[in-house]
Length: 260
Ligand SMILES: NC(=O)c1ccc[n+]([C@@H]2O[C@H](COP(=O)([O-])OP(=O)(O)OC[C@H]3O[C@@H](n4cnc5c(N)ncnc54)[C@H](OP(=O)(O)O)[C@@H]3O)[C@@H](O)[C@H]2O)c1
Image 1: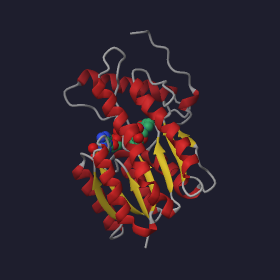
Image 2: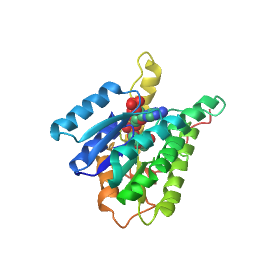
Image 3: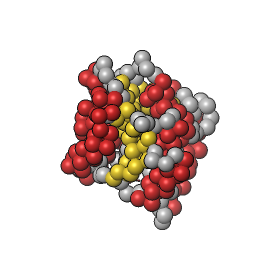
């Protein structure tokens, strides 16, 4: 029987690539999703086609504490005595929040999906991870230190997740290793229909960003998936580490823009 890996926010983008990579590493996948029902079904079908019985879908809103407890209980019982070998806290929401127009709902959304959800899920699944002597990987961000302008809550949430990574590495040792990946510019937010000005600004931002990244290009979802696999499977003497995968972007000082 193959070991189980759970990836949150698995249906699309980086989460889907991590799931494919972990299947190649011989895990069976528990694919968590929230709204992307069709994409999640398609990914599960793709993985099942490659190996029958290798993927199961689970849905939950990670902002909802009761739904997270329910998700953890389902995963715990699916994995049984063998436990959960890998948990990847990948799900996230990402959008700008400008000082002066921040609402409590922004705090709940960004903190709920990026910090509180991963905290509650990791806690709920700690016994299953211990049974498997497993590994936890948190998806952080190269801007967790607050250098992404107009994204104060998102950055604070990712900084919190970086801190949890180190705290849980201590608390779950010696049985479970806990690490993080800090991506740079990998996949941009998708353009929003009917918001042409914002889409144009995003495109400009994208060009300027690529020009300042030392490796002069964006990364690919596969770069992140390989880093997750490395931490989850190969890095058997690493815990409490956060691995930047950013083409050197973290080395570039933040752009000075006129104060708005
Ligand atoms: N993309 C990048 O360049 C980049 C850069 C730095 C860091 N990262 C980090 O890398 C990870 C993956 O990035 P990404 O761009 O692929 O992520 P993403 O597309 O922004 O989000 C991944 C998934 O998170 C799920 N999600 C959002 N809110 C949720 C909630 N309340 N409950 C449950 N699931 C929820 C969504 O699932 P559904 O679609 O099913 O609703 C979404 O598809 C994230 O943690 C991100 O912060 C990415």
